[in-house]
Image (cartoon, rainbow, N blue to C red; front, side):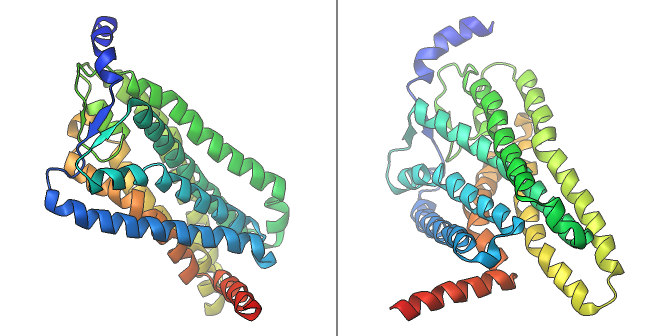
Length: 317
């Protein structure tokens, strides 16, 4: 059945898509344009600052800040892959996106989301080593291992997307071009299909176990060991230091995984488009912009590095 449906569907599919977004709420579009643009600029500024500080300040040349710089670069790529198109659609009446543009957006949103899932697990392991094995920390988290862990995160995310993005785009849609979303996201595109998508959804769920649930399990296991180690620390100052070391990462994990699990671990037929839009808006613009703020506000080293860099800049002027 699929080949005949796909043959009829090919011409309309390659014409591109119409991103409905929030066009049913025109009074919201200008407000959302301003909000999204503001958060996008904050994301670029904040994450660029983290990368520069991690590069310029020798005190931040540690595994923790190496992973944090990767997370910042990832967040910049993630938002740049989706927000410019969103701003274009919010600003004017044209809501179209080309087939190629939709394919690229879907691929990178899936890939970078997967990378972040695994990278957050890598960062949790780093915190486990720092708190539970402080004396062996530099031996455990050597530069080669850090590079390997980051490579696994990036390759796994892009590998997952290489499987899921083409499968999603090849679904027959019987001429349907309206995407009830503001970006080309997998649940919305699967929901447009005019064939049974149960096999694809099963594949998506199986890969989500590897990309989403396995890293989350490793994060929870790491933090269970960290909690036990912190409770054994006798001094209040020691406990506070250990808590501050991990709390920023925990907040980021909660913000990111809370929305991702809701979006990608439910069947397409139970997917609420309105809830999906606002949750996607949250993890697309809010989470990447608050990550630098969370790590900066609760991190003494980053604050001192910022003062040092800004102080040097002021002195040079």
